[in-house]
Every structure is written in C-alpha cells, then in structure tokens.
Image (cartoon, rainbow, N blue to C red; front, side, top):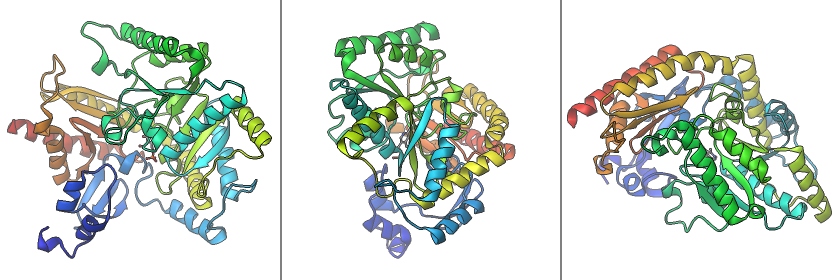
Amino acid sequence: MDTALLNTLSALDARHHIHGNSNPRAVVENGAQVFSRGKGIRVVDEDGKHYIEGLAGLWCASLGFNEERLVEAAEKQMREMPYYHSFFGRAPVPTIKLAARLAEITPEGIEKIFFACSGSEAVDTAIKMIWYYNNATDRPEKKKMISRQNSYHGVTVAGASMTRIPINQEGFDLPIDRFLQVGGSHYYRYGEAGETEEAFVARRAAELEDLIQSEGPDTIAGFFAEPVQGAGGILPPAEGYFEAIQKILRKYDIFFVADEVICGFGRTGNMFGSDTYDLKPDIIIMAKGLSAGYQPISAVGVTGRIFDGIHNLGAQKGAFGHGFTYGGHPVAAAVALEAQNIYQERNIVGHVQTVCRKFQSRLSTLSDHPLVGDTRGIGLLGAVELVADKATKTRFDPSIGLGNKVFEETKRNGLLFRNAGDQLLFSPPLIISEREVKEIFDILENALNKVAETL
Ligand SMILES: Cc1ncc(COP(=O)(O)O)c(C=O)c1O
C-alpha cells in the first residue's frame, strides 16, 4: 500500500474491516472512501468533498443526512429507556406505539406487526411465520417459496436463497432446498422479440402456474415479490403482471409477501408500493424508510389469518419461539415513529408526487442518448440501462466497465449513485428539490457524453 495512506482512516479500514458487497481486493489495495458527515441530500468525504447521494445511502436516507428531529427522538429515548426487549410478554413504549401506527398505515388486511433489525431478518421471519402457520393448520407439506429472477430479499441463508442475483448466491452453496425461482417481470429485458406486453404477462403467469402444478400446489407456501425490483436493476413490473399473478396465488392458497423494504414509505409516490400496484399482500416487509435509515429497524406486518396460526401453535407450545434481542429496540422505534410523524406532517408522499414529475421526465429524456437502451422508474426510483445496440438490446462487453466509467465521472463531479454493471440506479432522498433533481441529471448527462466520446 502507498505509504502516504498508511496513517489514514482509509488504511486502517483496509487492514481491519471486511466490507459487504465490495471487492475485497480493491478495498485492501486502495483503502475505502471514508465519509464523515452529511447535510440535506449530500454526504461529505474525509477530504471535505461534497456529493449528492443519488441512492440515499442504500435506498434508505429518505429525510437526508441531518434531520435534527430524528436526532432528538433518539436522544430523548436514550435517556428514558435506552434498551428493552419484546420477549416474555413485555415491551417498551415506542415499540407499542410504532406497531399501532404501522397497522394503521399498511395496506388493508395487515393487522399485526413483528419487529426485527434488518430487511434480511424480516424476510427470514416472514418465511418462518408461513412455515409455522402451515404447521399450525395441518399443511406440513406446504413449505416451498417462490421468488423471481433478479429479486433481492437480503443475504441471510433463507433470504439469500430467494435473492436471485448470482453474486449473492455463488460461492455460498445457495439456494438451500425448498426455494424456487420464476422469470423476471420486466418487459424490456424479458419480453421476446415481437411479443406484446400482454402476451409477456400471460407467459409469465402460465410459467408460474406450470411450476405450481409440477411441484404440487400442496407444496407451495409463499410467493415473495418487491413491488419494483430494486437491487436487481430498478425493474418495474409489466402492466397487468401483479393482477395476473395474484389471481393464481389466490387460486392455490399461496401467501403473497410484498417485500416493501425499498418501496415502502413514499418511494414510489404512494405510502407503499402495494398502493401503487394494487397489491393485496398477506405479509408486508418494511425497513429502510421506516426509520429513514437513522436506526436499524425492520418490521413484518401480517393479516389476522396468519396471526391466528401463530397464536394457536405458539399458545399450544408455550411460546412463539422466534425473536431478536434488538427487535423493536426502543431507540430505533422512537426514531421510526418520529420519521412517520415527519412523513405525515410534511406530506412527504405529496412532495414525491410533485418532484418525481421532473425526475421521471429528465430520466426518460436520456432514452435518446446513444449509449442508453432503456430508462425506467416510478416515483423517486429511476434506472438508466446502457446498451451497445439499442435495437437488439445487446449489452456492452462487461470488461469495458462502462457503467463504472460513468460512475467515476459523476463522482468526480459530486454525484454518487449505484451502478449494477451497466445499469445506473437512482433513488435519492425523498426530500430532494427540483433544483437538485436538475443537478443530478445535468451531471449524469455530461458524464454520459464524456464517456461516449472515449468509445
Ligand atoms: C427488497 C429488499 N429486501 C430485503 C433487503 C435486505 O435488507 P437488509 O440489507 O437490511 O438486510 C433489501 C436490502 O436492500 C431489499 O432491497
């Protein structure tokens, strides 16, 4: 390592810190980029350089990086009751209030709330709840879960078995048994040449029904879906997709789990992605925007029917034998509750509905750029997909690292986003202004032009 780096935080990090979802060799050789503070939608690195956080960190800092009310809520709760749990029939105050608030705002039918600390834990909890329910109701064979190509449902053993992004499974001996996959729901990438969107949806619905039939309907327990697939490339569903899928799930009594970890709390222009796409989930998974990312907290909302199963079997056994030490942590719950207050008082959903018009219109203009094959999004989610050939949708040779080159160029100019290969993903803080939307797209457009010149 460069000796000049040796005494820096970056060097310390390179020596001792294992990063998630990073190239370990690059971190060890170059050290990490260190961030020390944030203001509004921007973060500031160790060298004092300011960047727009085009992905709100990891899709979560909805209220930006210096919301004082959330700091105060944490401080107040720390003084009153810094820790307590929800085991043995006990519970701290803000956790009870947050459960009631979430039961009120989640889609119709969701009645009861369980808390964990991360999206992955919430996903695993949902799987276990479904297994538990099916044991409670004497359906011991009904245990398999279905998720979709490109889906992201976290990295725990069961969650990563449903995450269908190769890098999250390869090398980990995943998926484990009982986890099945169906094709992706994004028409641009998976529609066949000459196939209408309607025909594509019919094909995906038939594929699902065929899988259920071939495995045996009595063995299929749940279908997990993000309303808009996030980490897989910001892939909104084809028109009519969820209507067709939900019909099949109802027919075979398969639980529909909406993984709202990214879409929840305003991201798609409604409180939940389920509202945007008219989903009727049996279980809803929430995290990220729940606390605006300021505290690690996640939640699983279930219908009365599922709770009845948990209630009956749990009572019979003496306990529902599941729960996390820090699940529903009072400080995290107090912060999440205050985030909900802010969303309501400042009409964050209304703000997203207004500001997303400019965001989506600047995004779709990029479709005309010679490097761009597809632009897509909804609310404050947006992706740009780079292709070598617009007509055939052929991707660039990955060794060119084109998405990375665009990223390096925008980073030089003060904009961070996430490039999943040549898919450029944007999910800025929900408090973004129209002027800041313009800044993002001006920087991005210049970067695309500059990189295009080098080809
Ligand atoms: C849709 C979805 N589900 C689950 C997860 C996992 O959440 P966590 O990283 O908090 O475990 C994520 C994380 O990005 C996600 O986007």
